[in-house]
Amino acid sequence: MDTLERISSKAWQLTLEYGPHVLMALAVLIIGLWIIGMFGRALVRLLKKREVDPSLIPFLRGMVTTLLKVMLVLSVVRMVGVETTSFIAVLGAAGLAVGLALSGTLQNFAGGVMILLFKPYRVGDFIETQGHSGTVNSIQIFNTVLKTPDNKTVILPNAPVSTGALVNYSTEAQRRVDLAFGIGYGDDIDKARKVLDEVIRGDERILGDPAPFVAVSELADSSVNFVVRLWVNAGDFWGVHFDTIEQVKKRFDAEGISIPFPQMDVHVDRQA
Image (cartoon, rainbow, N blue to C red; front, side, top):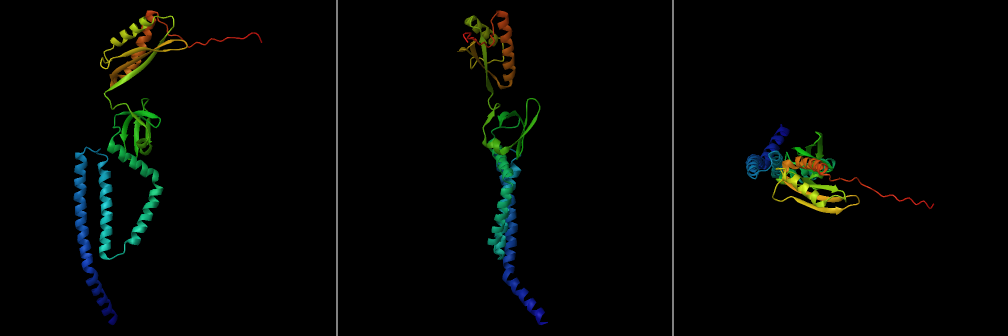
């Protein structure tokens, strides 16, 4: 009977000592979770107002609210009277171990966040990066998926894409087509220039502003080379590129203007 009384007395003492702290901790936990939920919803509204990529919003909200919940739980545990120093040390060591094990994955995750935040490219853009080029099919949190012109799927990790060199061919409405044509040294330069001008004027896709540029660029070993620079709408780039080459070849043939093959003079010393 004495043992039961001692247990009851001890329990009552613990209740009086820790009960208010437990009740206060529960109240803080409930109110804290409610505030974190409100903050999460406000963060979503703010991100949508800032036109952040929709695929990034859940991840940002999850990271922020999870961090706040961990801080809340640590505060509640401390209020109850539990020493949290060792707990934080164990949690930090575990976090470090997981971070080292998943370092590559975390880097790709961070790269995906940076891409979605700063938008160096969007879905549908044609880009060149990491030795690959293609249309962006999707931007995932760990990878970017490209569709190449020959219909291959290329999956690139976001970490090197976000930190490496990248060319986006879709950001500007207009692009410049750079071409080079060579004629023989015996051909008439003015006649060749006139043919090039006529081919350019005959294509309505070639813009007048900026104006097309045609000039002799080089006196090469076997040919006199022209450089041709044409401004077009981005969607017309490849069509104008290929069609101009074809039309120039046909017109040069019709006008008797030669396109010389590379030549090399070989001198044989017969004295030996």
